[in-house]
Length: 191
Image (cartoon, rainbow, N blue to C red):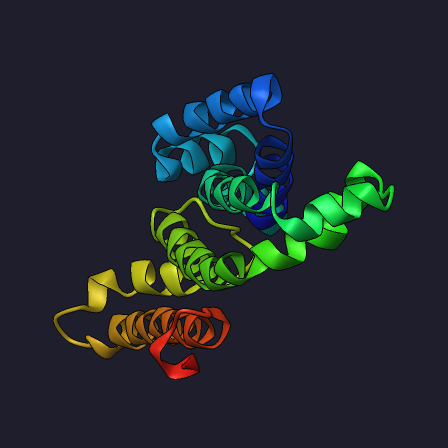
């Protein structure tokens, strides 16, 4: 969800520029001034905690990072030769944005997606640890919270879900680094 919102806002602002860009940048900055975890807690507290609500709350709180990245890519690509050629062929704005510029702006977004997924896992685990997760689902955060009283005698009850979170987040970060090496044309491995 955060990826979709961020791509739409960044693409529209970066491509059109001017007043549209200024308004979208101000909205993005407004969302960035509020700490994302606090915003997620407030959104989940307003509505009863469930997996769809938590996913939407995480998406609403994380889109500004993607929007800024996509906006920067679009601003650098909007006057490229292939965009000028697409305009001269009579392509519509939507086709230029989504068919020409967006595919060329995607490599850094794909890498950022792994970071977003890792942050979403950590955020959901934090919410569940605080008792704000979906009560009908088992989560690594709720497993750690349930095992707090057993830390002195059965430490592994909290250590195993904590290690699972660590390994998953580390794996996603390594995938992001690998994708960066593959997709980045300036990478040392691609020379």
